[in-house]
Length: 121
Image (tube, rainbow, N blue to C red; front, top):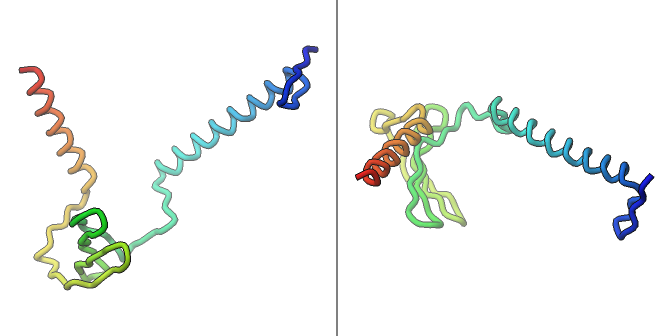
């Protein structure tokens, strides 16, 4: 049996290979558990009555949020130090986009296509 001498404290190559294998298994397990949690939409908070409809950044530290809480829609001013109620909005005044992530993806695809068309010219 081959022995290693060094500062690691491991005495044989099979022991070192076993530790490397265990490390790789832990990394693989962490990867697959993370993917499973992402696909299943696992979320620690299951909010059914609170929804952020839109966010508008004024600068790095301040933003305006349009929030739906139960059946009411409100505008909130948010900064690092505080959250302030600005006003209540009527539901017919607010345009609610159901699937905002897909509309953002479509916008990105349109911009990318325009950029690619410009490069071809």
